[in-house]
Length: 323
Image 1 (spheres, one colour):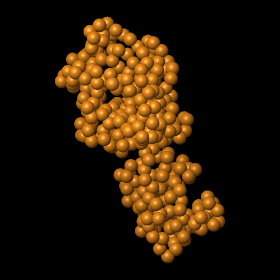
Image 2 (spheres, helix red, strand yellow; image 1 turned 90 degrees about the vertical axis):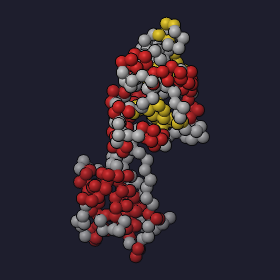
Image 3 (cartoon, helix red, strand yellow; image 1 turned 135 degrees about the vertical axis):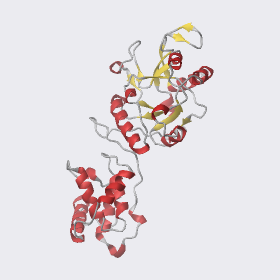
Image 4 (cartoon, helix red, strand yellow; image 1 turned 180 degrees about the vertical axis):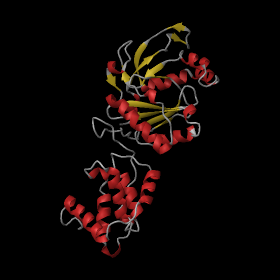
């Protein structure tokens, strides 16, 4: 989806939380629907007031009370007047905001992680929060009704991959967030297609990060080693733990590593096999740890029968003939 289409999505906006429009100094509790582009521009209008808020002690009562004077928006989509509960939503925006708070991530360089997350294909923008001490990352998802499932999975994924702590209380669809501005707002160019985070199953989110697959062509197949070729033939076509119908996945994962121990490129095979999975998300630290635990268990003849057999079953007797 193009960024311009995302910016035109309709979002419910409140002029303020406590009914007082700080900018104009009048009582006003207006609820309306505006485009995301309009909301981002509103943050620029309130820039001076937001700068005042950012001079206050972080998370102090003074700052929290002052924040209530600002307009806020409901990332999940559009809601009826005075009914911003999850179940009341009228139309999903298919957008999800993830907050990364400095207070919960003291060991993280917030600005650096902002740029790293922005490069993910499903991220639309990354910006400072209203306090200026944290950031929020806006994500495009396939189906907004599964917001909580997406949020739970992304929280675990980013914690595992980037060591980020994310507030679990912010995952409801009707969650409001205050307008903000950022002189260094990161937003994708309109010529970039934002790839929505898609659902694998309707009951649970099992999507993982896109990772590069090591191509077999980068390595030399020595002595026409058919077993070696069989393994890379499968791996380059996405073969992973997902293809094994078993409940004992970690045991299978380990024994696959033991098979790959026979080969000079065994660790590269194991990394590719692990990263091919769409059901499990193991970071490089876990993959390397598991690889270091493996050892040769079966003979090369047994390994050959196994992997050539898998290729034969999946791609036919003449799988090894390049087409």
